[in-house]
Image: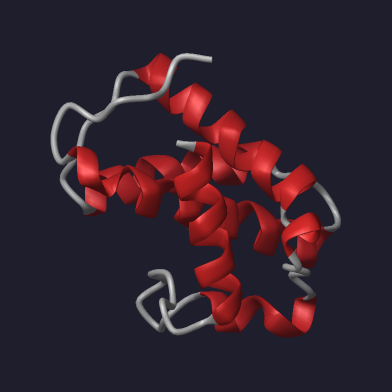
Length: 114
């Protein structure tokens, strides 16, 4: 798989991937469905909010990687996102909560995936 690339600020890639993994896991905990449309919408929103651009095909690959990590790797890493823990993943501004142990474990997975 070709690694997705930002047009700017390459260092944001792990944070972006972790955000999408958290979104996918939270969405699944809330709906019991892997909501691809929600991950894609949040992908666009994150890029706009952070003033970054990414080629559309790279965005697709990034979203696919986030869904794969959320579906296949989180439980093996000891991360079980449940309805009761969704709020702990994000701040009030809907950014990742870096003090959350679950987010920290997700970040490790994202660094390894990239």
